[in-house]
Amino acid sequence: MKQWHWIVLAALTAMTVAGQFVESHYWWEAVPGFFAAFGFFGCLLIIFGAKFLGGHLVSQKPDYYDKIKKQEDVTTHAH
Image 1 (cartoon, rainbow, N blue to C red):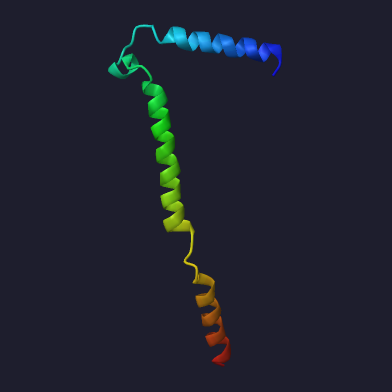
Image 2 (image 1 turned 90 degrees about the vertical axis):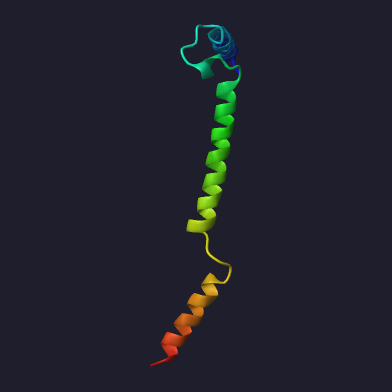
């Protein structure tokens, strides 16, 4: 990374650390690491929720295409 990237990163880190000591308005702002844990568990919820929905709404059973082919064979040979 370029030098100015490191300067910006250091400034943002310093502001973040200083922001931890500012007066909090809600109880969760006073808990150290609350937003890190909130973000982590939120990401886990999104990941496992997407996996659940993908498994139940998007994916098909392994024999899905075999059933379609059998139905097509039956309908084409019926005439």
